Length: 468
Ligand code: NI
Image (cartoon, rainbow, N blue to C red; front, side):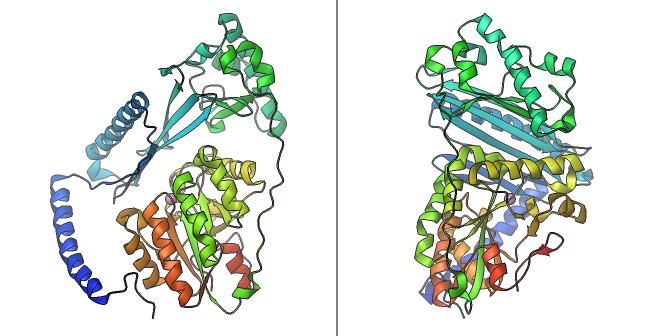
């Protein structure tokens, strides 16, 4: 018997009564909504991020975007997001009755700041039938010193310097072959796609180690190659850039990444629970979790999205160094059952590389979005597939007491608990549950720690819902 998340039991009873009324109202609202054909929408507003999640019978939708508290930028992003959201909803409504496979919509935003330049990329993936997801990219480049939006040519001294980007890009694209010899670029195609003009170079980021340029699928290579990214280091670039935009040519040396190691033999006779957090990393909320894990002698597992790693790499590194486990949740949260073999491979491999870039090693675990996997996907990933047996529905409730209650209700020895560290309520609910469960003799371990304590050798063929 586990003590509840609220200590006063009469409070709990009142809550249940309230809950019945709430559920009745909710059912009524859903009925009304389904009659008039409007879908329900869950929006979560942080002070600096917005998350919208919809998981309906006919479609799934996931929108995450930051709030910069810079009017000009926030307005543009919001307008763009609303436009894309409406477009998708129109398609769903138009074909609502005859949707065969679930539609899907994912919008995510990556941003980076260097030298007072804010580079923002909004990526939209939508699946509305057919052979693959549709992709749309929109980038904004903002100079915080002048409060103006910029194009790539604005960073260069003059037209002549800007035109030199042509040969530089060509050089670094060809260099990609050295690490991946399956990339056989067609010279004419590449040359066409890299002619210096603002639309060929819409998607770029000034980073610590240089200017990263992203060429969209089909721009310089076949669709199956996906996006192609190159980084031009500042020592090749500074002479072409206006003085205020020049970067540091001292690239930081690779650090030694050795995580904290702990003795798990003390947990041998304890009941074990693995808390897992999906869809991050997320600097603000993941930090709250990391700051509090030591109180409960806890380590957890993060299933991270490759697309979020660049913007949240510091917190990911910290999570790893603290001794938490980092697994893959794929690159952009696509439903892997809807995409072809090449795309599945890209979703998995990109993420593996991104994780390795930050923590120095490849992940061993994968959690496919929505828990959707197949024998083929498992053999492509060649990672252990970890699902869950306790679903807190934290993304829906956004209530720390509810999250805590759901955990206490279902946690058993060997449980794997599904949570999302995007939400402060999830993180706080998890910590509350740890406090209660610790008193019940539970210990909180990563997936690999749990496997080793239970003498289970994880393989890449099974799908694990719990470890017993
Ligand atoms: Ni997810």
